[in-house]
Image (tube, rainbow, N blue to C red; front, side, top):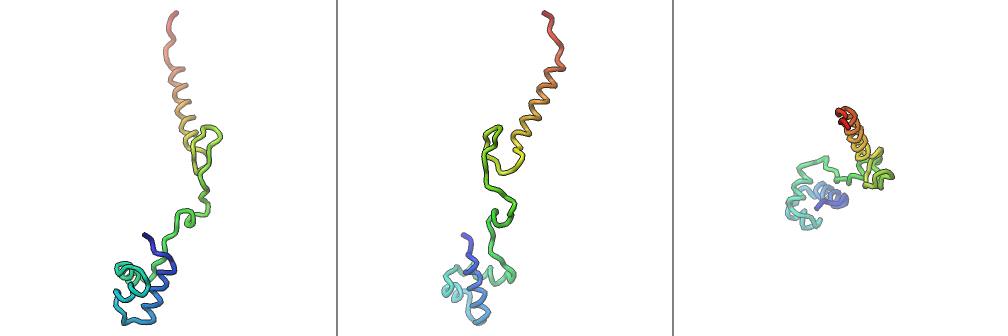
Length: 102
């Protein structure tokens, strides 16, 4: 479970205000586990984790490709590109086959 930004700030502020408090007392007063308090205090520049959508503003929600119907989150559809490449190699292989005598 991730800690919320307000929980991290609360632990950092309480530890700064009352440096003599034990990790157990900090945990009890802020409502987080003692291990979380230890991690927050041992990592002074700790920032709350952001979700993928917050981290990358260019990320678009998944949508349906108009050509193949797959759900994709990138443009152009990589599945369609791969299928086009496979189709072109199949066509080339068929063209290179020797013709059968009738």
